[in-house]
Length: 510
Image (cartoon, rainbow, N blue to C red; front, top):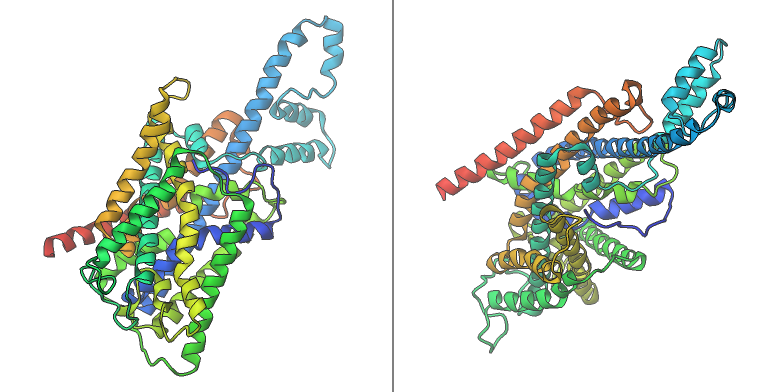
């Protein structure tokens, strides 16, 4: 799985955790949303994005519950192991000392046994033993140990389930890398080539620079080659996203998005835009918008790294709900201002490029800053995602305790990480299409189906190991009833089938 997004041993308040989750979710998906939003129509898009935000939040609470269940099982096993180690020592004591010691509270006896003894001994109106048992019960399920989704899959799924989990995650990460590999060179190409802000439908076959026989597509591929060589080399080593790099990318992100939103609002308020976007778009635009939205709300695979350090976690699901509301409003505000500022067919698949050499943003330094924003932020993320993909590929295909030649780990798997997304990027420059496909299939599986199976299997394993009463704990999802699990599965199957049928029909008619 992905490495920790925060440094090990770090602890922060729920408000700081809220900011981290916000920054995690609001990324590349936000740059592609305005175009998809405009094509689907602002009313239809608003309804879809609200529904998808709610479903994404529900499954995020499932991940938190699964994390708590994993923590409970780990702590229960650890205490049970201590008890097993203690019994041989206990048997060596004579009968007298054994009898006297049994009257005291043994720290190595599992809480279930202690609780039963206390129930028999307690006849008071106020059952203090129940209070202590409840406290111990809560301690088990407190999320104090980092258990990522890969570890949870190993704990809760059988071998086939683990393989399917890693396949879904790997496909999603490949899509992520392909999106980054297209977005950065495309931004550089459109900034450096001779560019007319009023001609958003420039052909890739047109010249990039006057006097040079280099097409825009070839210029894009030159930048892609430089990008692959400059950043791809890091996949062969180990790098981490440090706290200072996070701060830098966070500041860049906020400045860029606020610049785009404020400049659009000012442009509209001055009466310079007379655009009236369509309320509903063509039916065939819905599947792609669905994929973009799923991709834009993706955070589930990284939640363990962000939720575990939060202290206290008493109302973590409430804080997460507030975060989702803020992100939903942000996406709506960004997309609505975009479609009322630019014509829907002229909104680029990387929204930042709409502000380069545009009257909407008259300050030239800000034009370059906004246009180069994806270059800086996505370039810092590319090696991190590549290393994450490399580690997951090795987890799927290599045995943990077996020795392999250094070329397999150091050369073969990093190369397997880099080649497919770079090849895809050489073939297409359509970021919106890549985001739609990645979100529609691998993204929907990770965001909808995997959390459902994790929480269901986690409940079953908790009941089997620790007893039925242990299922209920402080981090259970507010949507704990089984009907929610069934509804999410039905929703996911419907969405995947809908997108697939649309792609098939589109292929037949094209």
